[in-house]
Length: 539
Image (cartoon, rainbow, N blue to C red):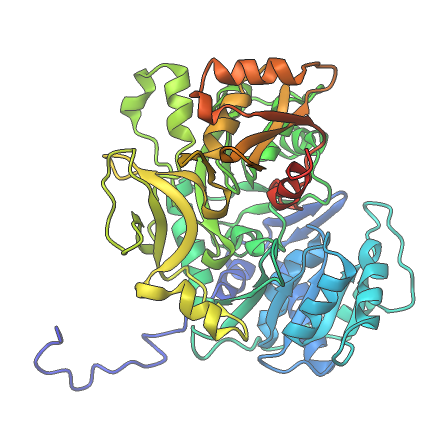
C-alpha cells in the first residue's frame, strides 16, 4: 500500500538501512568530538577518545569473561564513570544492561539477579556487601562480580573480587563492537520499583532508546556541547537516556555520586553545568539550600517523577533555573511528554504561570499519540475537569515485561500502554495529572486528588515537603491524611496545617489528620506513599 508501481531494485541494503541504536552516537563522537571532554568526575577527565577506548575494553573484557549476545550484565553503581561506561560497554558486546537500584534490599537484589539471570555484576565497593549477601541467597548460578572502588569519593576496594580497572586491562582496545542486526533487539532490562509485590522487568529495545536520544534534544532545545549534570540515577530509566544522548551533541557529563544542594551548586559554579534532570525533591533541595554558589547563566532543568508543587516552581525560577515539566514511566524509557511553553503565557500572573508549568503537557516528538481516555478507551472531554487515564503509544514504549506475558498483555490492551495515571486534559490538549489511580482518595463518594491537596500544603511557609494519602474512616470510607516534613527551624502544629488547607480547599478535601515526620523516599526522590498508607491506618 502506498508503494510506487515499480519497486524493482529499490531494496533495503546495508548502504541505506542501519538498525537504530544509541551505540552509534559514541562511535561517531569518538571521531567527531575526539578531544572534547566527555566525562568529568572529581579530578578525572575523559575525552571522547578515552571514553570510547574504555568502553571498547569493557565490551572486549566481558566477551573474554564468557558473556554472549543476549546475556544480561547487571550493575550496582551510583552515577560514577563506570556506570556511564557500562551504558555503552555492555550493549557493545551484544549483552543486555540491567542497572539495579543501589538502595534495594538484599532480597530484592537477589530476586532481580535470579529473574534476569545476570552473568556478571559490576558493583561499587560501597554496595558490594549487599551484592554478595544477595548472591548468597540466589536460587540460580552466581554471577561473576567485578568490584569498582571510588577513589574520588574515598571509597576503597574490599579486594575480594576482581578490580574494575584490572578487568578493563584484559580487554582489547581494537575490539569490534557487536552492533544489533535488528533494532528490536533488547538493549536494557529495568526493574520497576515494586511497591506492591515483586518488581517487573521492563525490556527496552535499541530503536526506542535511539529515538529518545533524538527527540529529547528537540524538546529541550539542546545546543552543541551542553554540560550535563548526571543527577537522574542511571538505574532509573537509564538516566532518562540522557547518557546515551550526550555524545550526539559532544556534550560533557558531570558525574554526581551523592545528590546534595552543595554538589549541584558546586557543579554549576565550577563546571558551568547548563542542564540537568531531576525529581521535584531535587528542586526542593535547591530552593531550601542554606548556602548557594553564584552563577551567571540560566540552567535548564527537566523535572519529572511527581507533579511539582507550583509553589516550588515559583521559587526556583528566581534562582536561575528554567524548569520544564516532563512526564513518563519506566515503561516509556523516561519522559515522553513535555509542557511546551507558550510565550503568550508570559503576561500571566506568576502563580498562573507556575500552575501551567506544573502540567504534564503534550507528547514529545518521538511519540505517536499520548492522550487521556475513559474506561472504554474513548477520548475524554478536553475541558480541564473530566478525568481519565493517560494512554501512550509510540516507539519509546517498552517491548514488554520480562517473563510476564499476562502483565504485558494487560498493559497493552487496546493497542495503547496503560499508564494508570489519572489526569484531566485542557482545551489546548495539555494533560495534567490528578493522581495515580491507586492514590485517589474517595471520601463520602467524592474523589479527592492527593496532588491537589499537596499543592496547597506546599504553599504553607513552614512546609518543606508533604504527601497526602487515604486514611480509612468509618463514616466517610476514606479521609485525607497529610504527612508533613517541616523546614529546618520551622514550627507548625496539626491545627495550623488543617486551618491553612481549609482556607484553600473544599471541606471534604481538607486533611483530617496531620503527621509530622521525615518522608520515606525512593532513590529517585519519589515519596513512598505505600509506606505512608500503612502508617495512616494506625493514626
